[in-house]
Image 1 (tube, rainbow, N blue to C red):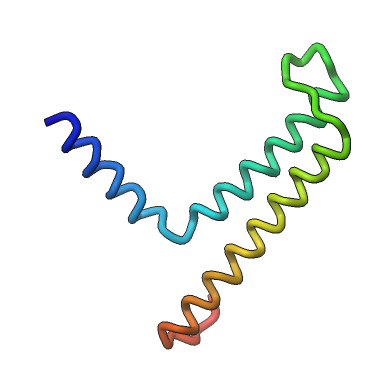
Image 2 (cartoon, rainbow, N blue to C red):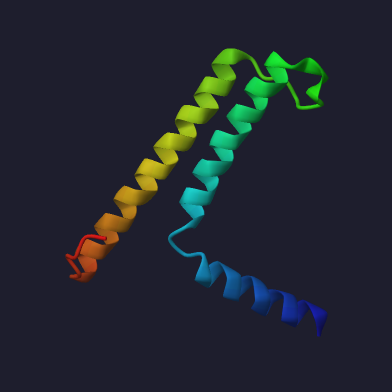
Length: 86
C-alpha cells in the first residue's frame, strides 16, 4: 500500500513540475557554484570549497540550462500551435 501511494505521489509531482525541471536544475547548478565560491572565500563557513574555474563553470552551466529550458518551452508551444508569447 505504501509503495502504491508513493508512486502515485511521485507521478503527480512529476506531472505538476513538467516544464520546470530544467529550470530547477539550472538554479541548483548556479547555487552550487555560488556555495563553492563562498566556501573558497570563507573557509570557516563549513561550505565545501570549489576551485574558481569549477565554480564559474557550474554557474555558467546553470545559466545555459535555464536558457535551453526556456528555448525548449518556446519550441513546444510553437509545435502545439499556440504562438502566444508569455
